[in-house]
Image 1 (tube, rainbow, N blue to C red):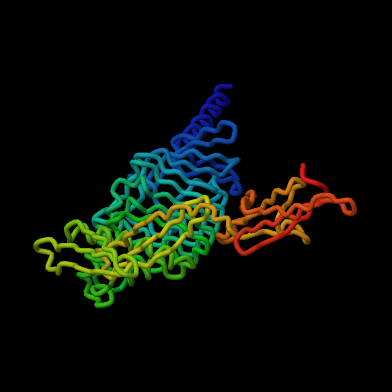
Image 2 (cartoon, rainbow, N blue to C red; image 1 turned 180 degrees about the vertical axis):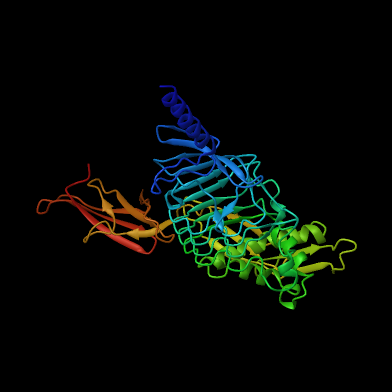
Length: 434
């Protein structure tokens, strides 16, 4: 009996040890996450910790019904080149990822979420950080590459986004992506990485290649400006002499909406570029014989090494014609060749025309005027302004009466003659006048 109890205590001890380490001796078909400190399940929500080596660990909650993964604390890390996940979570079943404040991306975040077929949205909330390791920067190349269901990405909450140095192919192949907010990435490290310095890697190449429905890409106002400053130090002339237009072209390479997106990004860049190198601009409108012109001037800041800007252009105009009842509008636009002068707009209201009823409308096939039996004549006048259908009726004052009294042999009658403008018409009323 003592031997039997001792045997049971031995087995219980072994099971306790295996439970703590998470390495139970189970059939190979059953997979247990490596060394979870805690895994609890409530309805469809599973919470736990994914443990790697050193500081590579994070806590999470996962909704098995919706596929929503929330990183609640800790540091993300990779396994096999992509995000390390518990064995109990199918990578392609994840539909959304939210990183909470205090969580972080690893220094090498390249391809971390790439190929997640079910992922539709990603949010890094305020207070998320990136690790920089000994490099001083974070890499996010191909971060979401080939996430074909991904529609929205919001990285605006990253507090040290200035440390991100590479975003090439970040959204490559994200064919469903509609909007991406990268406003936390200030560009201070973009183009400053060693591979870019040597001329080997373009830090923004094909970032949006294959994003067939992308309509919104939000960058920090400093992003392009800082990146071009870093690229100017590259050993490669391709990078060191790169223009803003070329930079944005590489960023949007392969994106169908490149034209419209580049206009907005370049306008943002030149606005910031102007604020860093010039005083505030001044604009003056002047009326000319043919319309309006606008003069734009901007003084270069001391030490910028740039020339003052002074440009006068003739404004184009779009007219919204006035109608009888609504005001019209003349919209003038002055477009400058200088990139540090912005388009200027001027509007001039045109008063409503009011009805101009002068066109005679025939009353019937027989009469132009409308007659009454007492010899009064009325004319209907239509507005002559464009397609206006307004009409008014007014009594004609120029009416003569030729009275023919009743005689022994003939009934009496009166012939009325009315004249309005160039139109004269007669109307006969039988009988003696009342």
